[in-house]
Amino acid sequence: MEAQPRKRSWAEPFKIKMVELVKMTSLEEREAAIIEAGFNTFLLKSKDVYIDLLTDSGTSAMSDRQWAGMMMGDESYAGSENFYHLEKTIQDYYGYKHVVPTHQGRAAEHIISQILIKSGDVIPGNMYFTTTKLHQELAGGQFADIIIDEAHDPESEHPFKGDVDLNRLQALIEKHGADKIPYVCIATAVNMAGGQPISLGNLRELRELTQKHGIMIIHDMTRVAENAYFIKQREKGYQDKSTAEIVKEICSLTDGATMSAKKDALVNIGGFLAVNDEEIFDKARNMVVVYEGLHTYGGMAGRDMEALAIGIKESILDDHQRARIGQVQYLGDKLIAMGVPVVRPIGSHGVFLDAKKFLPHLSQDEFPAQTLAAELYLDSGVRAMERGVVSAGRNSETGQHNYPKLELVRLTIPRRVYTQAHMDVVAESVEEVYLKREKIRGLRMVYEPEYLRFFQARFERIVG
Ligand code: F0G
Image 1 (tube, rainbow, N blue to C red):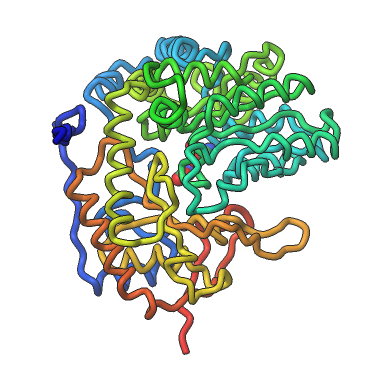
Image 2: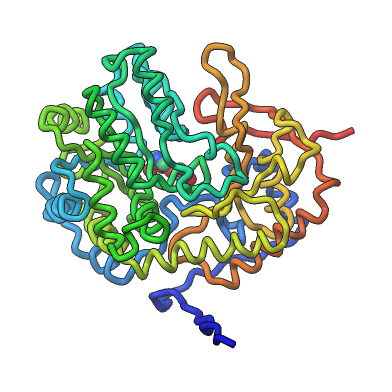
């Protein structure tokens, strides 16, 4: 008999130097807190949360080197040394020529949308993201989804559910004309699809098609290194390339990027717009002083830019990504083994519960994902996020809810923050809620803000 290779465990490539104490709460305390928050996990106070999986945005633990960098902040109004370090890091590691710092991702989206989009334009993208789409609309454009169908199917095991359906893009070009399409917006590790990667093969074909029509590609590079690690694991010919090399290759196939550095790049605040075109850069550099701050800080303190420059260099390390993606996979595998319906394959930044399958007795008008996130909080103090009908908002013409195919609850894992034991507690809590799922009733919305309603909407339990 042939000997099986022995399974060898691995652990995080860091040790813990400082800890933050968190509070355990009672069921009564959580019941009071979720009612006060209008059953919206965004409105909970973090002191009432035990394990916070609301988002991976701005919640990462910085390294000792990043903290040391914070002490090297050059807080000059103009020409901060930290800006030049950041600019060079972005040029070296991502390959874009020009950098405009912003306070976070949506500010970069605002600037690029206002510069490139004219009223009546169409912006194709591999699935929408909430703030990205809104900025496209506020600039007079309309988003068009060109992601492959598999991305909308939680059970499809397609390894690259972030890929673009090129026929769909071709049809849009024929329908509207290339001059109505200022750019294609390509996200890496597509958030709303469950953190699903785009392949380099697909991106290369997309590049060919768009170049033929003179259409640019703007890259939402918020989670580019995580996407790159999936390519290393799954795409033929990339096993021996480093995450860093793959990141650079992805960026080289695009014309510019918006970055929320609060995710991949391991900082608590920050972002930037990066472009290769001189003229667009000029306009962006001019706009940033109106909305953000001078073009050498753009809404970030010098110390934040230093921490970001160091965070970028740590984010593209293979060992970091192995532990990062590995931890998300660990939680996902546990939930799958428990029979809980989750989006497959497990994505980059969290495990996404399929609320339609979890609570099949609730219609989308009863907000299954919103309900499930509230129930999970009640069970254990674990805070998750709705990514379903509430996040999808309303159709701007008809005023009706947008009913997305994916009705998800996102258990988002902050980077370098929680241990495997935390993941075990989360999995057991989800299982507990799953076992009593048939008794769970839905919610109705009692307050709805005009923009990005998921952040502030309020709900009540449906009774009777
Ligand atoms: N693009 C993607 C793919 C994002 O995930 C986010 C933020 C943004 C842009 C906007 O960046 O928050 O820095 O202004 N996503 C957070 C999340 C909010 O929880 O998924 P920002």
